[in-house]
Image (spheres, rainbow, N blue to C red):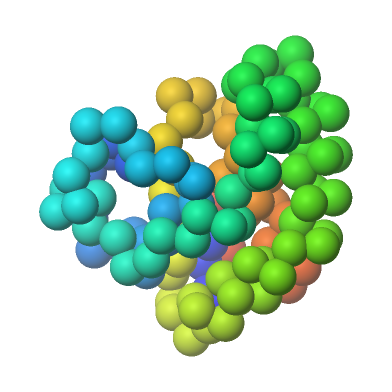
Length: 124
């Protein structure tokens, strides 16, 4: 995997995004398939419904959420599925629907994948 980025589903797609993978369990509200311009939608890489409900995007819970989500990723076969699907792409952009660009599971997933051997710079 080459450069690994993250981007909101509500931001315009462009060719610099490379291979676009939606990493949310649920489809982003109000975004058409055409506008999303996705190559993949990997629901199973997202946090479990129970974990997502517990977190509720509460910034005060981000540290504990990160710990729990990373534990899920350690045991999630979807991680290897994602790696195999994006292997060989120069740029991969993980697409998410959360409002906060700094507090979301896609950022945690990106960092997790980088630590596991992916490289790249943070998206602008």
